[in-house]
Amino acid sequence: MTTIERSIQVSTDCSRTFDYLSDVGNLPRYMDSMTSAERTSAEEVHVTAEVPGGGHQEGEAWFRTDPERRRIEWGSEGSSDYSGWLEVDEEPQGGSVVRLGLDMVHEDVDDSIGRTLGNLKAQVEA
Image (cartoon, one colour):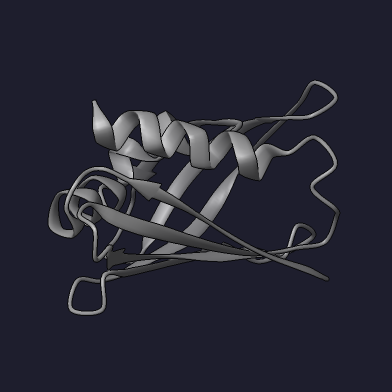
């Protein structure tokens, strides 16, 4: 298992940033490779993704939000055994910083995490 942590600063305040990121419907707009996400219960979502090499994946995942801590956690079980988290913190100079942590079974050889952070920044600042 590989654990990767990265962060990015955005110009929007913490509340607006967290509200956008915690909306399941926005996941495909910023999560690299994800093509759809739909909540199926309080903590479950159905997701689809196009993965490197042209593969298509579809399945169920869990998605939990903690507005008080401005933290989001997600994951899926099975062969991918994928999980991650986002935290949104106030930046003293204004705006906020988003910290992203991922536990993956493979290395991020194509910098999908960098693309996700770039997408995230573009979306919340739009």
